[in-house]
Image (cartoon, rainbow over all chains, first blue to last red; front, side, top):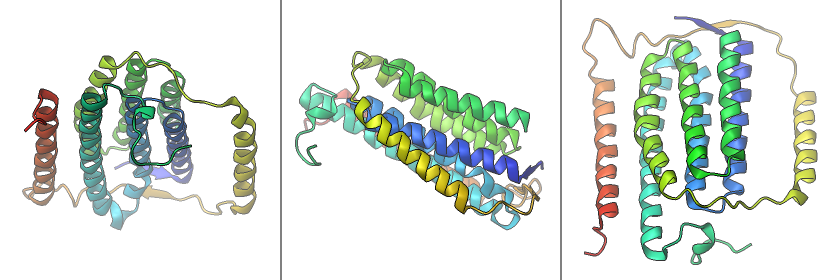
Length: 108
Length: 158
């Protein structure tokens, strides 16, 4: 299997951090829950990218693959729950803006 | 290294497209492309099982549902973004980045690591454990998807 040097690991971590930051910014600046869902998926993409160097450690490769599988499926499940929550919110409030959520959370 | 830089550069550029796009539909498309590029980095390092899982499960199932949802609710272009906070954020990011740059010692070693995924997926023995794990998790996602479909059709009244 191909090797990975320390420079590639640095590039991968920097990219992962950049995508995570973009996801955070998109989540903070979003006004509707669809944009929130998109930014969450972007954050999970950053997490997937941060897992790559874990595969390079020989005795951690199998654990890394297990972690990757569980991360992919649990994040998919979490996003499905969020999609169903968006559907319920639209059914009840007829609105998908975050301002429509008036119960729970902090008011700023 | 060049191919890796090109892939991660494209991923970052498309993720910036998510942030800058005003339409939810195009933002979700950019997000899907970013995730495909992230999966391509796995393929670059010969980790095809993870590439397949990300592209087919995460992008293929969840991403497409998100794109469909964003295409339904695409007329919500307004965002909350205060330009007043831009300068403090940039200054803080610069200070944090510079302090990390100064504090982190330069790496003295430059070694190469070998990817080893041969024990998890063996070519000779039947793959039972990862297959079982994937099957269980897949059934969990299918169950969740069924409940989402039930809610979408209108099963919340009962």
